[in-house]
Image (cartoon, rainbow, N blue to C red):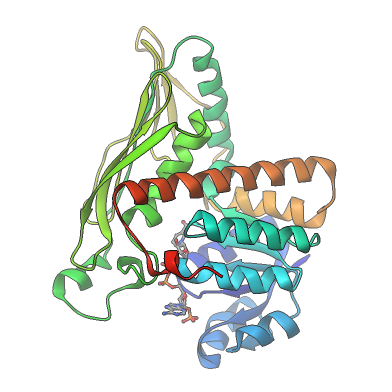
Length: 339
Ligand SMILES: NC(=O)c1ccc[n+]([C@@H]2O[C@H](COP(=O)([O-])OP(=O)(O)OC[C@H]3O[C@@H](n4cnc5c(N)ncnc54)[C@H](OP(=O)(O)O)[C@@H]3O)[C@@H](O)[C@H]2O)c1
């Protein structure tokens, strides 16, 4: 059983703990929160026995092997550093880090702490249905492919606060916490493009800004050698569009690129063929299983191969996200305070 400590006590941590339970491979032991009272309130129902409001003590004294970091985006970097320095296994929520400078500093630190492992919780790439869909894309590539259109857009109830002018604005709508549509939902779309077609040659982002300075929604174009991929993402509107990968006369259609439950291949005659694969009720279960396999066998050759692939993917996504931001002159305070 892997002992688990958590940072961040909002809904996503509940979902992760539900998935962790479904795997039968983790037990929650320690909770860090900004207040001790809240750490206890959150952790006791899950059976946690250690509670901290001091992050250094949490890492130095906490009885856990794995830490799950689900704090506001701009805090991931410093928290992950502390975790690596304490030789932990780390699951960091997406987007793992804010820019390539943070990413390379983390890489160097990981190299200095060979017992530590760090994975980004890009849950969709671990699901069986998404992996089956990627295999179909490989088959399509043997013939002809012409890019994709990926949409991830859902109105966030937290945007009501921005509209109402009720400060402090939610972290995800602030530059301070590296928020905005690209960082929050766009990252899934970027992961989609990168897992399907690899790293683009150039990118451009056209954001619609909110009054807090972050992007509320936007359209990004990723240029590849022979085609483009269009990303359409946002938190200030609802979209009901599917995501599509284009062959010549054939198309692969995803109901959602990040909470994928149904993928359909339409052949050249427009006949529909569902992609068959088991789908977990909680879409974080597959990633929690994959991560447990790595953490239980951290030096196994096959596990290391997968681990290196996830890291490489995560680094590419980080770099594409940064280029998109640069193209739109979207700057976060974190961009200026590297160590
Ligand atoms: N994989 C997914 O599907 C998914 C879904 C949602 C979110 N996420 C990711 O999970 C992370 C957290 O997102 P969220 O929406 O839960 O964020 P959030 O509500 O803004 O904050 C998460 C937690 O961080 C702590 N926190 C809040 N404000 C803070 C501050 N100013 N300083 C220090 N700590 C603070 C709080 O825990 P305490 O009160 O206990 O300190 C809070 O529960 C983000 O990276 C996000 O992208 C992933």
